[in-house]
Length: 260
Ligand code: NAD
Image (cartoon, rainbow, N blue to C red; front, side):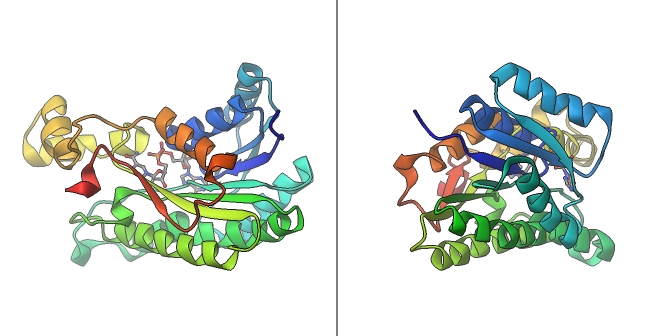
């Protein structure tokens, strides 16, 4: 029987993070879900996950745009469960604008949430992983961590940064039984992607179905979205014994995007 681990997933009340939370909960692990809000629905979501999988899930509020809060999330998770074994850096936002028009505050926010938060949570979690002689850091980067698209300068910059950080953390922990890898999804139909649809439909004068096929999935050769379950399953694999010697690398779940 596998050991029960404690997993923290940042930005996990919707989309990929929530899918990862369900996947790790289904393995029987303790799960901490997180977002920047603090309302009844967040705690109810944690209860829903526990009820579905019979594991222990709690919600801990922390704003990933703030370094201290990101570090405190790890401390609070350790208070709840003893320590942290699995860290999934998933919180992320998107903003689409030409670089000359990119609002400075939005640039800073995308970099803070999508990249800096992973620095803070990883720095806070590694000492516990070293002490307990086991750890898994999984960064949810993106196909945009390996390649670029116009009008997504902050996002592409942050995701390339996360891929670089993944390699450094892997090297610094190589002799400890700790691994650090990045998953690079192509398009997954989540609220983050849904939010980009109205503007794209207007820009190209296309209906939703055409925008999805001709614009979003244009670079995804499978012409299918990846699913949150597939990303969750990849995280579970990276946390398994089979993946013990996989570290410092990226796993693309992108329907062939980065093979182009
Ligand atoms: P989503 O918008 O569905 O979910 C994002 C989650 O992050 C939400 O739970 C939200 O509450 C939380 N969040 C936002 N700001 C936060 C903050 N300041 N502090 C804490 N939590 C915060 O997005 P998603 O599509 O599931 O994206 C999750 C991750 O996957 C992101 O890092 C994104 O860049 C990456 N990704 C997504 C896709 C895709 O196509 N959806 C593709 C590649 C990579």
